[in-house]
Length: 421
Ligand SMILES: [Zn+2]
Ligand SMILES: [Zn+2]
Image (cartoon, rainbow, N blue to C red; front, side):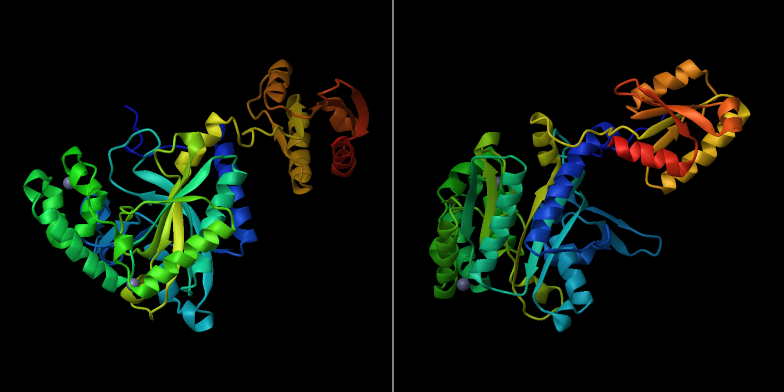
């Protein structure tokens, strides 16, 4: 009996990897142009990072985390998202003492225990940026602009933003009261989760997907109407800058995002090309998270998006590097002397930077030639007793079928093959 993969995980096979490389390369390239630097952080974190960072009342923490005790009984969690870890690393390494303003990006797998479906896995992949160290609205807009540039470069058109501001901690405390007042009379008609959220954090009611709760959610007052002067001004400036850059948006008064660390600006980026239902990525400010995780009071803004979604888009558009680029040279060998020569030559040519392969299965010459064709080898060289003795052989350019006599040395072969490119 064979062992299958864990439900909700997937293998990215060589045939698909080109799409992933395209997305990763495009994202890295754009992040680099906007002067964001890569950070890599562990897949495993202390559970407390997420209960404190993301919030006890969120769906992620309540229902979706892969949490377990290690052999010493410590509660660990497979990271369900990247922002909390980036901030943890920022605080832990005291990056603010060197330079408080840090623009960072990351790529990698995340884990959430959700119902698996097309494009949604329990081990999924995210790309994201985090700009830590400034409250300036220009930074909100730069982050959005970066996300926009990424989608445009990946060929997605009809881009627009869903935008809202949920204000600072004081605004949110007031908004909680406003929401409680709104929902109080209707709790009997709402789901169990919402009744719990009503007590713990009424903002989270706005995340509810249950049919029975939608009428109450649709008529709920918007957060942007309950901002203090400073937050209202910040939000107005974000919108003015978006207009100035020609980035179109739609105000969504009930957009709150599913994690508790968000403050002020929240946004989702969508594409009309994809039917404008699910967002491509989402993000916003998290001005209190650095402090909540033990650092100084330092504001920040960022976004994260799912790579699987983009891989599906790339597949539909037929985009991505071909998985198989072909190799420079296939060495077909006859007999022991031919094989010895082949092994030595392959090692030397590879060290010169050429991609070279042999059959490795002791098969007949005809089978080896077939293999060379299937590998899309640019050149073929047969090595047998004669070649081993004379030091000369015939290299075949597969595209034209032309054979040329060459000296069998790594220098001569490298020159010949490079000239063909
Ligand atoms: Zn405020
Ligand atoms: Zn509900």
